[in-house]
Every structure is written in C-alpha cells, then in structure tokens.
Image 1 (cartoon, rainbow, N blue to C red):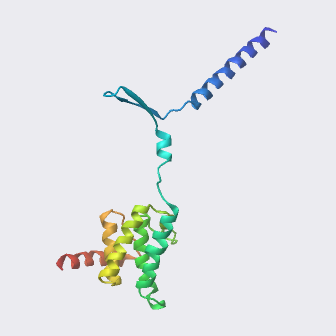
Image 2 (image 1 turned 60 degrees about the vertical axis):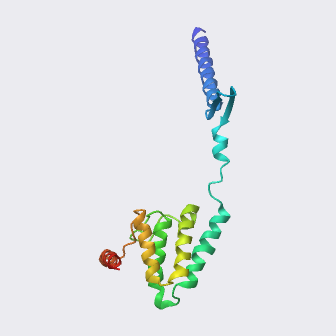
Image 3 (image 1 turned 90 degrees about the horizontal axis):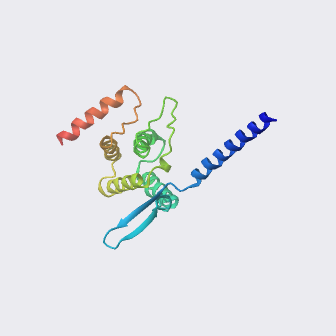
Length: 179
C-alpha cells in the first residue's frame, strides 16, 4: 500500500509539473514595455501582433509584376519563333538567376526554386530594368548584359551552359569596359 501512495504522489507531482510547464508556455513572451519619462506613461507593445499585421508580400501584386510586368513584356519584345528559342532561354535563365537569388539549374535542368514566388522588391527591380530596356534599345544582347550585370552586382552568379559561357562573359566584360 505504501508503494501505491508513493507512486500516486510521484504521478501527481509530475502532473503538476506538466501543468506548470504548459502554463508557462501559454504566457505571452513577446510583450515589451516602453516607458515615456516625460509623461510617465507605460505602454505595452505586443511584438507578435505587430509582426503579423505587416503586409510582407501581396500575392496579387506578385502575380501582376511577374505575368504582366515581366513575362508579358519579354514575350512581346524578345525575338519570336523557333530560330530564337535558345537565345530567349539564355535570357530567361539569367532573369531567373536574379529572381531566385542565384539558384542555378542543376545538371538535370531543375532549379529547385520558383522565381514567381520571389520577393516583390526583386520583381520591381527586374520590372524597372526591363522597362528601361524596352524604352532604350530592345536589343536582346543588351538585355542579357543588363541581367548579367544585375546578377554580378548581387553576386548571384550565372547559368553556365558549357565551358564557353565563362569565356563569353569575360570577353563581354572587357568589351563593355572599352566602350
């Protein structure tokens, strides 16, 4: 009978400890007090609510930027047809390197990231770059170079296709510095 009472007491103690742990977990951790010494007011700020109420990314804006601000314009102004498919793909890959913050395709052609889901600010940068290109030259080589330079600026790297990619990039850099 003593063992049963001891076991019961241990179980009760463990139960109370669990309740205490759960109660502490329930307590809000992200509250902050701000004291205004001029007015002697104390203000409590709930940091979690403040963070959750921020509008980080707007899905509608993201859709509009990607499909109407980037893809639609590229499809309209880049050369069309089968003969230019490879050239368009090179530009799209450089665009996607930026939107995916340097995530290149692997040897199977899989990037493992989706540029349509990138940050709105990155899409805005790209939209501005493309609109500048449309109003200035509309030359695909110029667009490629602008995208290449943008990726260089952020140190994202580039989609390499074979050993000639790097030598092409080096020579285009030298050529641009001369002009």
